[in-house]
Length: 61
Image 1 (cartoon, helix red, strand yellow):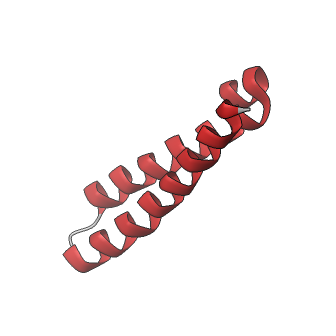
Image 2 (cartoon, rainbow, N blue to C red):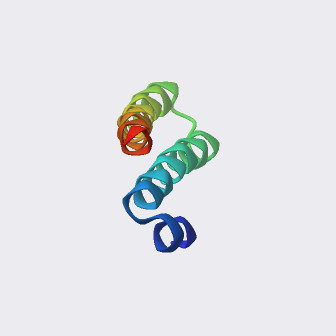
Image 3 (cartoon, rainbow, N blue to C red):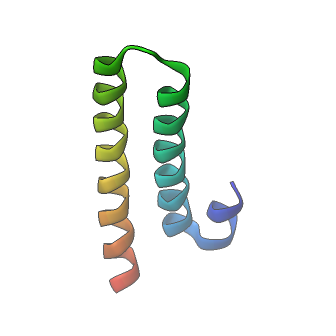
């Protein structure tokens, strides 16, 4: 929430990136099933990547 309040849309995207990466870490620690870990990590990193790309576009303006 702190990023969103200070930086508007760029802050919101930053929060989503942090959340996506944090979810990946939590999933990895909490789960033993390797295929589930890999699948979840791919989804979360895809979310983070799209967020980073959007943040990059916002910062270029």
